[in-house]
Amino acid sequence: MNLLDVEDLRISFPTRNGPTEVVRGVSFSLGRERLGIVGESGSGKSQTGRAILGLTPPPGEARAARLSFDGIDLRGLAPRDWRGLRGKRMSMVMQDPKFSLNPVMPVGQQVMEGLRTHGTRGTAARKAALDMLEAVQIRDPERVFRAYPHELSGGMGQRVMIAMMLVCQPDLLIADEPTSALDVTIQIEVLRILDRLVGERGMGLIFISHDLRLVSSFCDRVLVMYAGRVVEELRAADLAAAKHPYTQGLLNCLPQIDGDRRPLPTLARDAGWAE
Image 1 (tube, rainbow, N blue to C red):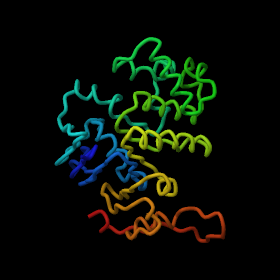
Image 2: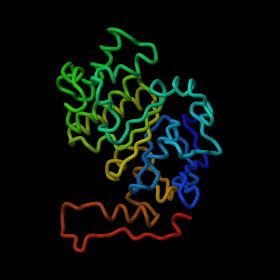
Image 3: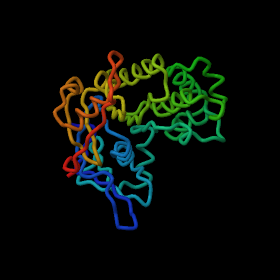
Image 4: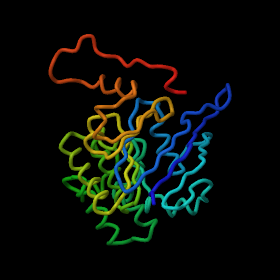
């Protein structure tokens, strides 16, 4: 059985001219694997991830023909049931830690919050939080545990966010640009942690990214989104041989170390791709 099933997911927001759909008919399934979602900013990647966790911001509306997690129908789930799932079984690493971390709460309290919500308290919660901070390559976890978010660099804040989402060892993790603020060495360590959770614990991972090279080497499958739709789905190892012109255009715009590319390539678009 699939861990996650999404069928005909549609997300709309009201405008002066009526409701506008930003995600239009997205369908996919997820097993205990690493699924990459790529596309330009505004293609609907993050909104898709948020909708799976019931986090579509009002007045937006998310609806789907099917949206189930481990046999649980997520459509119309009660707030109490969502609280039992979020953090413990489903988590999401948000894109920008500056807007996701509470500025008036020490980092350690925020990392322990999910543990406390789901029944782990006291010394056990503190130890688990410190161990996870150390696991994401934070050199002095005791100091960071006591620090406030404004005392951390962008990369450090990103690692704290990842620790917060992984500390309860969820079955499903949606990672929205989780390595964008990290240098290459820390990026590799974080990917190893995610890879180990998928391989050893059977976690399902949705990895949202702009980095096509990273996705092609790290993920098992890739969805390519354009204007709220999935235009191509393929094995990550076959990404370089993608057939859709939009995916080919994204690949063609990747920087090349060798050679002089002038003029710089631009991404051509066809209105028919969004139909």
